[in-house]
Image 1: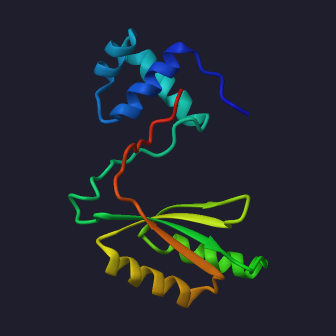
Image 2: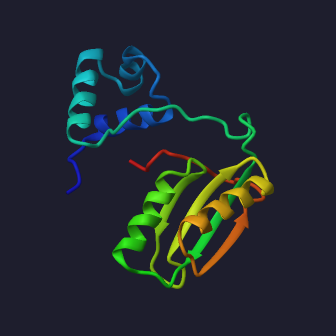
Image 3: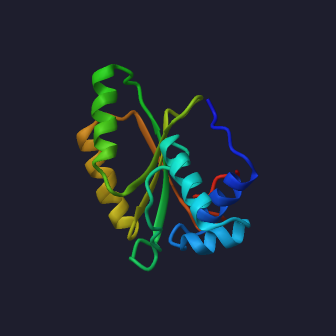
Length: 153
């Protein structure tokens, strides 16, 4: 069930998604309110689960992680034990930024960030040594056109 949010809540969420490190005073000024009501709204949205953990966004290229691969996985394994091992393997691989189970011909898609093609191959070899996979296709992203963590509120 979706949380009930009003216009001020949505404005607060937009500001937090843009930069959660801003002061309450700055956020309150931008949304046309004062500090205490903004703090109370943020607290209520946290309690309701609308706002999760807060983190920072790092620049992967500044850290030398220049290659982004989208990995398409098809499997012939659908048993619970295989799936448990596969999900555990993905969770333990820091290179995997996102993993999605799909409907259609492809079973899973991964977003993997590594230094280069050689580092991807190391990741790939480790992955297939841990779980049986029917088919893997890796697509190298040539250019990131849009990337955001901001949801349309």
